[in-house]
Image (cartoon, rainbow, N blue to C red):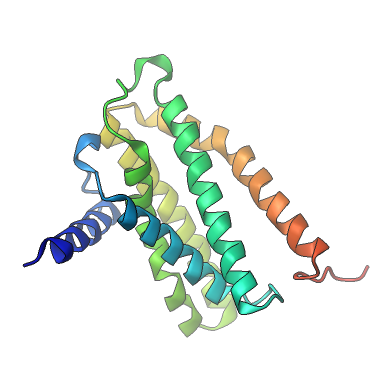
Amino acid sequence: MSDFIRMIYQLVQDMIDLARFRVRPLTEYHYPGWQIMSVVTLIGLFAAASASDIQASVPARIVFFVMLKWLELSLMSWFFNWWMRQGENWDGEGEILPLLVASSGINLLAPLLSWFPDGVAQLLAIGMSAYGVLVLVQALSLATGARRGHVIGGVLLFLPMAVACYLVAITFAVQVDWIALADK
């Protein structure tokens, strides 16, 4: 097996393991930069493809969602690098970004939601999001050795940043007429 295939296989295997709550120490999650960039970009592409409410050209929609995903993961990485060091929960060994990318692998299943009727797809999307948060909490807790309560507190503290990020993105989309607001 070539090194290229082995590297891709390792990342996919890590995503599957994390989705099954099988977590290794943080130092074991390293991937080449091109893999991290590819996965984040692919998640953004999938989000763009499934966003029927955005009335933008395909290239604009792709750029919008890829940049939004990069912004979200950059903020998460920065925040959790800081948060996990608070209260002597993590010694700082290893990198958080590769773990965040691998634990967000569940988002690669989003295109499958288009196979379901709208109401069912929305319920499944909510369930998939909740499951993604559970995977993230478990991964950060076990990989860093931090207390689960500390990680949950970090997720709750990060929530206003995530909401602000999405509000800015939606405001931008409304201002460039990609999203039409309903008349009152």
